[in-house]
Length: 285
View 1 (tube, rainbow, N blue to C red):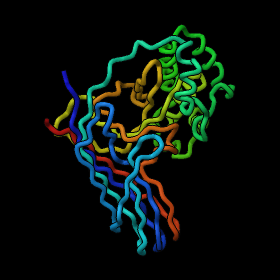
View 2: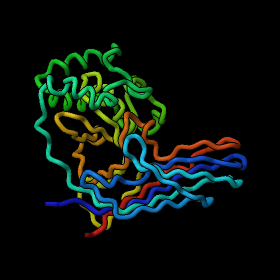
View 3: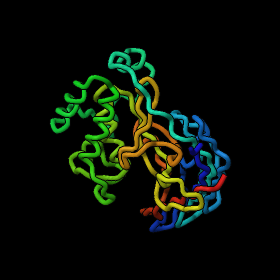
View 4: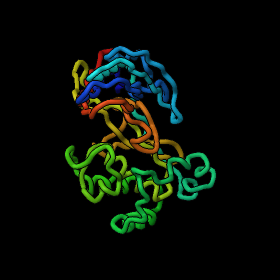
């Protein structure tokens, strides 16, 4: 039985500007977490134009690398390279009852993962989803409701990388009926939080489901959800698969806005993304 995987991750992204930019200020969240059984072996961030990089841990526990560029430039390119050991997935939780999940102590401890945000609304206030919330609340245990919410999300959202953008809300994704991993995750969060089940957004990377030493997977960043049911348990609604050694955790938060891989401000003309390329290779241990 596998004990986990060693993965090398190369994440390339950046911006191209329509006119020279005099200064830019940027934050990067591309460092795999070194916690919860996941072990970060090395990490390097390359920035062009060259810049001095500072690091700090944000409110949600993610390592943020920040830098300013104060020379004229028409392109910003970032390459993050990491080596990480990822543990095998944790066993499924037995879970607790509704009284335990909705207890005041849980609300006090995990209240930030229960409230609506700009991207994750209260699904119970939406006529199209209110009936689903009522039916999930009527189930015998939170565990049944969690699995029901995953099923409802997958039944509604089809994978379509042209249907939504980074500012698309859970309500909009539900109305569209399509989206990417971010939209699956926001949709699931809206259902779970409406049930008063704490749930948080996770960003990271994803390798093949099967063990494939030496194989390089080319893709983008990935997102999934962790749910509190007596302990934190992870679900990947986009792929409906177990979260384990193929999933690399980078950051957690209330929604995508808390964990963007790259964000910044600049003085100058309009910008366009250079695109995102993520290469993940499983190495022999």
